[in-house]
Length: 434
Picture: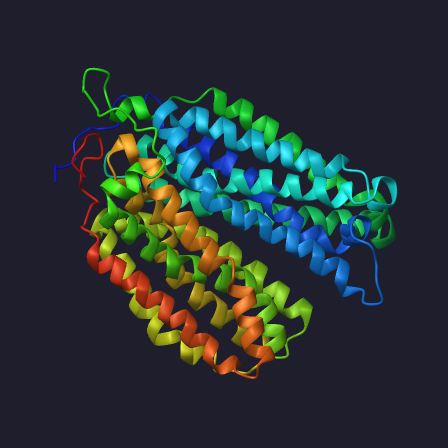
């Protein structure tokens, strides 16, 4: 392991790189999540209604799941593209895919207009968004971490989840205000198209901003450095670095479940298990999400000072200890729910803030994005994306008491990954040895 040197000295303006990467990732998150928030308004426009009003909504969320299924493949092939042609080109590709997917939804004719072609077009649009999201996180993570000044990779890494938090809050606020302005009926008639159109336009702006950034692959591998050529085999990184790939999968497991539970599904969980009102649960969720977003850079700075492993240990051990207790509380009191969600999210921030840094620091540049893209996206798709399904299935079966232990089990997997991963916060990420 090399001692850290000025491996990012070639980056002339790291702050501009950080801003460009953060803005683009926020837009990506806005566009990807808009579907789930708006499905209740457009579901009946694409799927024939039936005796049950839930059928169109379930069909719409079935298409939503397609976006998750596309992510591992995107992590693999867009990762290979990023390693072969550069991070900046790959980020232009991901934002273009997201813009195209959002625009396609915004202008798509309804079922009553073109029949079965309507849900097919919607599915294609969602696949484009899934491909974009699958390649975006790992590519943007590499881009931002490779742009960081010496000793600030954890801090820069944390802005990946700052960006996603901003994207989620912006999307939720925009839709809430827009519905209040035009009303529920107008929203179901035509209004649901507007946020998708706005998202597509914002993606085009983000694409333009990213065009002005500096390529980071060139700053980590010099032309004379003789870096090994990038293989055309998309599984090359998995074959050459199986241990690192397995560690990435393990770290992403508990982190992904934690992110989709504590930051997303817990609002619904409070309503089902604690009997909280939708307004109370939503208000708690918004307040804690803001605090969680603000905690990311602080956790990143802590990892730059004391290392990545202590932060991941604190997340893993803390989650194992407090989750069964926190989720055994049945109160629907606002302050109690606020404390429950805030504790879970603050522990989670110790892991989410540095995930990009840890993954980037464990792969050499020529296989970095392809190496971490597939195992990360696969783990998030399998474990993170299925959190609502697991929680709801256990509740329906009368075994909701087992769900906290599912979170504990996935946190233990991440803890094992943290034990296995070498400490890398002072390592040189510029060359072959990592």
